Image 1 (cartoon, one colour):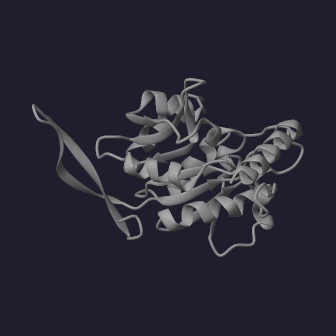
Image 2 (cartoon, one colour):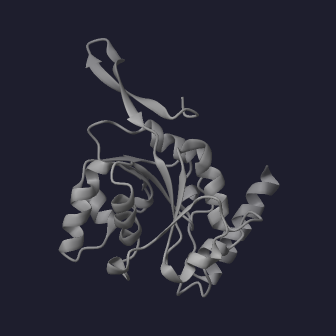
Length: 226
């Protein structure tokens, strides 16, 4: 079903005999939204261009999302726009959202595609797998505003590995108007389904050259162990 233009999220009814699928709800296949717009100040270079897997990380994210989404949109800031040579849509943060972090990309995306759900993936998650993303798709429910991977060790939501339904937009706008730009806080205050990743290392990221070096080593070790 994931290869078609729509897929079905099953709702489960509780009975004395356990669980069984009661209804099938048709849901729109999400748009893949790749976040590349971070400042990367501590890294000292653009994190979307690091080649953990032999290609730029933004392109690796494209390859992960493309089979699962209706289309791909690359979210970036104005300074990055010319560096992406791609057939996919490029969406530059609106100027009024400058310097507010990832919320800028999501607000810009909902203003450009107001009826679309978004499967968001930050470009600095090189160990996230397609299976992790499929779990998010399977976790969608009609009454839920968002589905995200959940870091059980840190007890926190991962807002850049998540699906945002159009129903969350009013909450985003409300937080923006109050000067609260944390997507994690938006998830906490919304109807959010939290799902642990297949393995904790899926959520490893790097913000400094030292952490990036460690990630390269982890990836090499994983390949060696096959």
